[in-house]
Image (cartoon, rainbow, N blue to C red; front, side, top):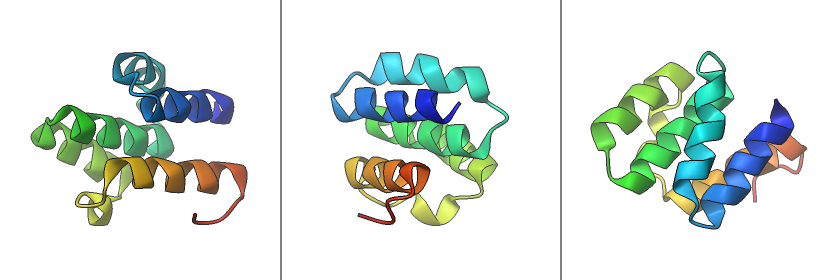
Length: 84
């Protein structure tokens, strides 16, 4: 699962939002997937949907963060690299 999340993040960082979205949708019950999902909808400009996924991830405090930096933060957390 973690490798799928990392793949989704890499795709999103390469502006391949749809492909990243298809991956995270498979793991709707997982908080990390929900967090990535929220970021993807933020990138898309769908803030209502984004807010829904941030709530599911218990990450509402991240809603106003810059999306690409936030994706790098999630990636760092997944790889044990700390916050970039």
